[in-house]
Image (cartoon, rainbow, N blue to C red; front, side, top):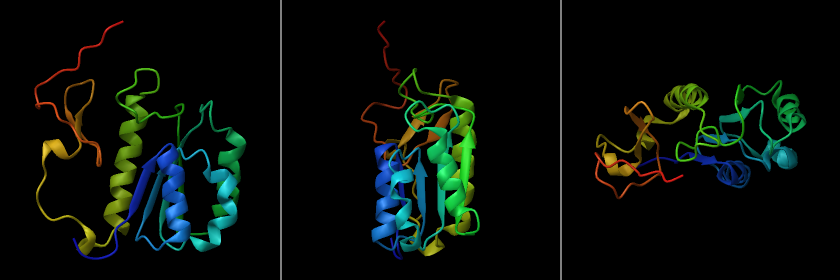
Length: 164
């Protein structure tokens, strides 16, 4: 890999991605439901990279006032994009039936991929190889869904048992 990497995180990782964008110089930042972001808006002038925020409008852990504060702070700044899905917190957590919202997750993921395709430098991408063990997961419909950073030690055909 060459070039400057981007940063992406979910939940606490979404807050940490924002902190890295404020303190470092990543090429791009994607923050999924970072609960600490509204309290760190004083760092907005330090973030120079294109940044995509994802939140749910029914998030019990992040009040809508926090999301509205983000929207107000980024209103006239072209490098920031705010996406709010009709979902709760951790809607992209496909391993949790409590939080998982497939339609919101798929919509946000498509927006993330389009954002990265537009803003992540081509020379910063890992070349060519795609491996299932490098983060692919199966949605409830059984089709593969790419999830960077999530590693699977199970074989591709393995189904997780769910005990209730």
